[in-house]
Image (tube, rainbow, N blue to C red; front, side):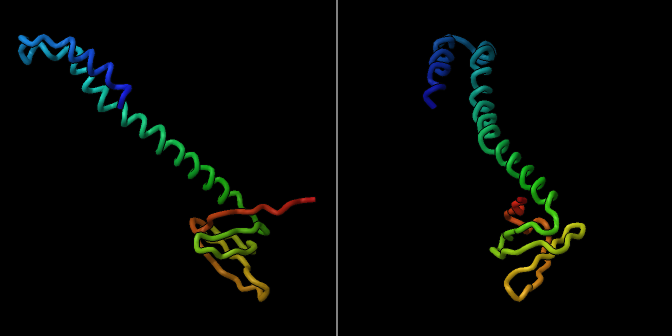
Amino acid sequence: MQFLLPFLAEAAADVDPNATGAELTGASSIYSILILIVPLVLMYLILIVPQRRRDKKMRELINSTIVGDEIVTIGGLCGKIVNIKDDEVTFESSIERTKVTIKKWGIKEVKKPVQA
């Protein structure tokens, strides 16, 4: 907020106390618009852009999964992928080789196997 104080002080200094409403449309209206637009632009740059990058990276990671990759679901289940269909993934978990089928959007993490 302190970075706006010089702008507000300058806008207040530019106002003539004897001016009518029609004469106040110059610089003070520009500063009013800037005060509204600057926080919105900052919020967009700080919050929305990084989230879109993370989402895009996660979508690419999920779409690049292959049979044999280790995954962790949003529910905390871990296992190795054994089958991939359109938007569904079947993976084995546990020693008993329990097969679980989930939607791709349910994948939280993908661990690629290390190739020697």
